[in-house]
Image 1 (cartoon, rainbow, N blue to C red):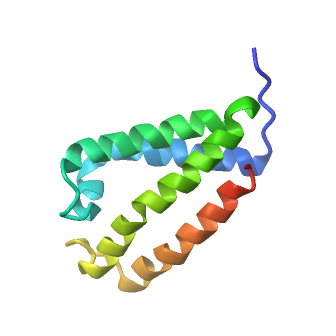
Image 2: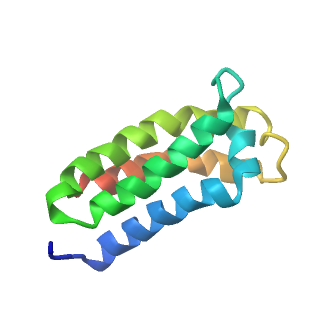
Image 3: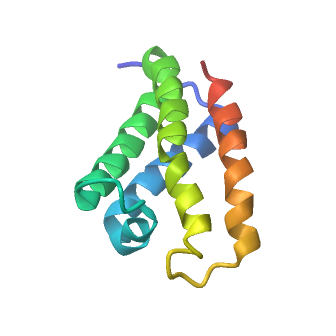
Length: 120
């Protein structure tokens, strides 16, 4: 069996993406609201993003797949960035979320990309 050599930082990242992926299935209405209307089959997209996040979390857990998973996280963050922009520009997509918080999410994506890149 492969050794799990995690730092606290890596463990937090694994937990973050595993939880985010699971949230797509536990709270689909939230995620469906922020999928831009030009994206076809939003239910399928929501499920796929959740599955990808959980798969990437698992990939981060093992040293042999960690680099590929970290690159996958970066790609995923770039792919979902339009949803964060849509969430901001659509007035919160009907959610009662402060606009300043939606603005913070945009540069936060850059920090998440930087965090993942540490494992490439």
